[in-house]
Image (cartoon, rainbow, N blue to C red; front, side):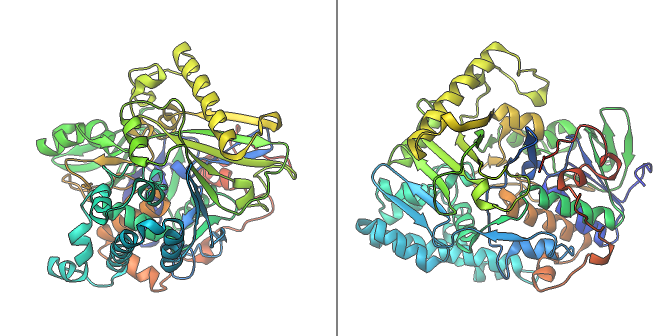
Length: 559
């Protein structure tokens, strides 16, 4: 089927947003082709393997709201994947450990428990915390209710149903902190997980913070089998319903004629035609490179060129020949300073020496029965920290998406080695010594992330400022037949955010409120069409697409 060159819809990029949109278009009767420049589908959800012993998640460290009635399970369940993608609970009494020099706290599930825990930890801020949490809880509830509504809400309906969102949603988080009279320490505890959306309190909106917090307060989970299970299930649904995935298929142009899309052109000279193109590529690159600025209004082009992006990460992937010290099944958010405002100001100035923030995700603890995570008696964890967005920190002036070959440059290698050492030093401050037990250590910089995803500056969070605080594009564009999905849209970043954007895009195309339908229990995909999985089934192989499933070069795990 992939030999055909005409399709009902083409999706450029196979992140979770693109795959969700593609799968829903397929189960509602469209012939859909997904094109991915990388070797496997999944975007920030993909995994990689090393030494035939370890599997590392790139971007799936935990998921929120995956219990009964959860948004992500509803989206995947609507495709018939509810039994194929399952979730392990993290410690619901403390899934995130927040550690500051002066205090520490485990964040629990449930708004009431969260409120009590905060007031026990920060009694001097009790009154301000009540005001802050009242606003955030109400805003999160309003936004979720609007998302799941079965009605076509008018502006008047939204005004009536979302009063807290209208009053506070577009304000910067720091403005709400000021309104509540919170101390620097309280602000740091409340915003400790702000790297989940890649912006500090002066840049992030109350809406963004409240919806992300509400997402995790509804419970924290990890997908059984790791992040690649999400992409593999979506690929199975896509292919079972007549769609196709081509990997190593680099789209260089979205073709437009007379203001309408007509298809796409690839780097290898191939082209495919379709009256509908959904770009899961980086928004700036979609507008300025793939489609071309000449096809958009000048004002949109200007604010896209000038847009600020969310901050990128540097990551260490670490394996040890011993188990980790016994601890809760919780992530660790470690700060060397009690004032998160100072931390983000230092980042803005390019000052990241010494490393003063770390996020640690303990994969071997989250999925201890996972076949590929690590050998028995070993451990596997990731350490992440935010970085300034400028390329010059890494000894280059442009990134790999623009063709820069950086990996062998002396300046880059030196910067990477020095930063790896700084991150290791900070990590041992956070969890104690472990270097003598390292069996695998690998560092990824923002340039690494950009090389694999082609995102501007290597950020997984998309646009931070697109002509105004909290402003982001919708999935529909001014070019007829062109839609966008992914971390840059108004539905937000993270796995659930982009999945919601993907189903919202499909809804706009097919003219149905799909999110309401599937959350209400509808199953649009036919589970009987999905392929059998035997003991050799490999989510990484499935995520290459049928045509390359058995191609050479796929890393395995010896067990």
